Length: 353
Image (cartoon, rainbow, N blue to C red; front, top):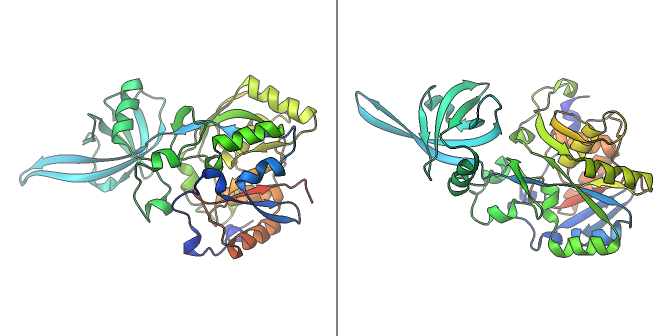
């Protein structure tokens, strides 16, 4: 299985840089094994059945992008360099230590300090594999408060290349049910839900369960090997509580469909069902779902349209078939669906005609 098997041409104009308003006004392409239906997300209560269960990722995106400065004094006086930092994940080796992407990394030395707004400082502990390990002067609630003031939402590279993050992204790039801080990227399929839609789903008899997967920046990293079986996923921390596992198991026992909203929720519940049945789970997962994978707990998936050659495109190909995904994406492009994080959505129903 080659990386080129998951490539396609996408017109630049179909990359969304702002979400639909209201959120549930986004388009929804409902796809079975052969059927296609052009709907909107607001139609979900009509498309889903009573007894179906949506699995929602309640991670909260951190304002993980920081801009600061490094000062260096030498024979020529004091020189200052602008430093951009995107936090990737906290490290267990010490409180307040984070792995981060730094631009430009070459302008930093081990031991130097980067100063940000709101009194936030970071010392460079070491550099490894194109990233830096930073130790911050604040921890816990003090760190969270300073980061909230100094940080910006870490928009995906394909949006950040077109425009900078702004105050509106603080709302747009956060889900309705975001509760547990820790992600540096949003579970974007969930961005389509608003309060009115949730009320309509509940009235329809569609149930929900919440799980947590802290989405890492690794979700944006390109696959660099031609043989995709040799690709290794970055680990991300997640939790399926006893309550969520019991709810999902009950839905399956009753004949309802388990439908994760987003690939992050799907990867997590499949990790929690590694033994064949859903079970409580807490820890890191680096599960890589690609064609040939045997789904244990997922019946369908609501997800956005993904980048060419991405692991997420491989995941949806595993769920509904590589050739079927090619046809679905060709239809979406022909019909002008908006792609990627702020774009439109699909509902993939491999159990339906």
